[in-house]
Image (cartoon, rainbow, N blue to C red; front, side, top):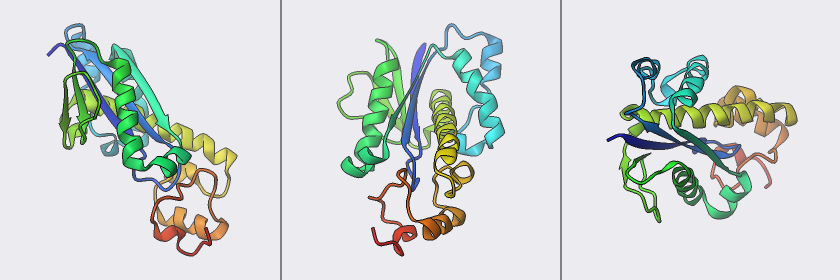
Length: 196
């Protein structure tokens, strides 16, 4: 298959911050041997440390035919539900990169109301270069957002845990409550001691 688009998200399991989905379209017929080599380290973004993701990010941008990132806000997640927002974000990202004849690969879930050929692949970010590339783009984009959010919302240490439910994050919530970036629809023990 010449044209392959991959899509993945970052931030699905976080207590705070947006959900970020990315889609990456590769034209495998146009990639040079050097470009293929530069992408050989692609894997699920969670398998790379911060420095490795930052190194892979510009490689993906340089080699991809098209890259699109979309996000869903905390309030939309709280208002319409995480799964609904996740599928919508993945669909919007894929619709922006898909072309006739392209195969669209999604990590985990089939996308409803989508007119291009698609395949949902469980653990696809570990088996598909296109999904892994989307995983890297989504994770780096979201982490950068959360690092900037740390400056606007000091005290929650968003730059350290980027919104995930770590002991440090739960302690910060216990100490100072929730920020505008916290997802209040989540059932988390971190919120139990708060009068929300």
